[in-house]
Image (cartoon, one colour):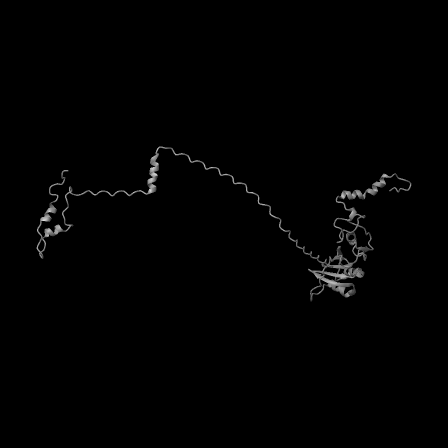
Length: 317
């Protein structure tokens, strides 16, 4: 090979090799010192400089090398469609568990004894008036005039009640009507309540009102099923139908009444519906849901008489 070096390329090296060494202790010449320093060395000609080789590229990772390799192996091959996943096989039917053995029958718990029903009330409380409360003039008049006729005096929610003896009922009512401090000229209602546990089971109640003095009072008398109670129609004629209703619904034995008969129920009706011991489903064999059936049974005797031919003893109305 021919030497491509240009003449004079090694001049600086050769000159440095042949240059005489300076004497010890003497200062170096300025040109020699500059030549010894690498910074001060003159640049080499362009032809003498070596071109630096580029660093080799870093090797790709194994995964990066495999991906291009796989892609370059078949560049033009069409992608195959992915195979559908195989249908999952149905799970085998679970075998029924073996029938559990019946457990030993537990002993039934004893049923608790039912609580006894509460005792029915034997009557209304009829509370007395509070201590220190003064009785109204009408009540005080009866207490002073007929003290032996009054069994008790009750006060409840602003209402005064005189509980009197059955034998003195008319005396008390007459005094309440005629006394100037009472003047109860109007009998607004006559009613009753039933308390079967009590010996005198009925409370017969008279509600009185004074149209002149504008005050009220109630008179109550306790009677049994067979006790006779005098009618008050002689004092207040308007009590006629009120007493008939009490007799019809409760069976209170009101005597000396001008027209004592049923007013709501038929005359042949059995029992008194407002009594607490009256059967809830009616009077036994005469129980009928349809009122038309009751009327049909009621008219049977009349229809039977109409079918018969009139004889010599038949009455003609």
